[in-house]
Image 1 (cartoon, chains in turn yellow, green):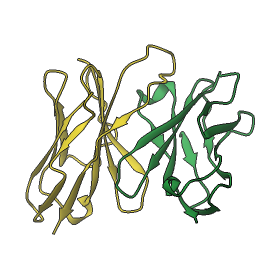
Image 2 (tube, rainbow over the protein chains, first blue to last red):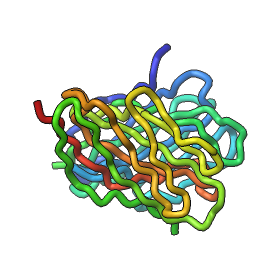
Image 3 (cartoon, chains in turn brown, cyan):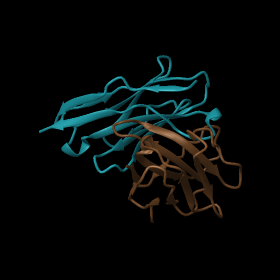
Image 4 (cartoon, each protein chain N blue to C red):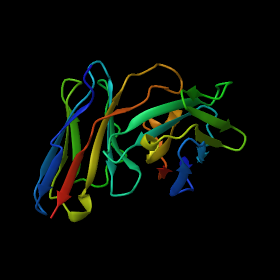
Length: 118
Length: 115
């Protein structure tokens, strides 16, 4: 079946502009995550959606970042007034919920959106 | 705070040999899960193997196995019979009950397999 789809694959924007990044998760996956990966670095958690519950926004670095998930499926990450330090690869992932105390469901990642702020 | 540490920024291994990638973690929760991912130069994140804190056996998936030492809080990835295609960045990650199901990732180890 289809994996996690992200668009665009590359985005170049000027400092101060707003950008929207899209994620289409695997069908049937109730959990959706956004991560950021700067060049040569690990993955930084941004936000997590689970079903109809309120999202966990604890990883968003500033109020310029926001995300929504419509209809429990597609998600959009919006960065307002972009800064050069926002340049990174933005990765979206989805997973099932196993119902176990510690969920053993792996995250399935998309190929990411490479954002460059000039 | 929960933390994942990968102390080897880079590793080299000869083709067909085994290699161990280190991962230590810090948590006070008795229940947690450990994941390993592979990220080739193409950038995709590929799930490799999972180990639960209560699992009695070390996890194995093909050429991948976990050397899980709970008392030492380590979950090292062992790749047997290395292949050129194993050259990639490898990330260790942890999920614990208080994390709202997100994974916390280590900084990664860049593995290069030499012909």
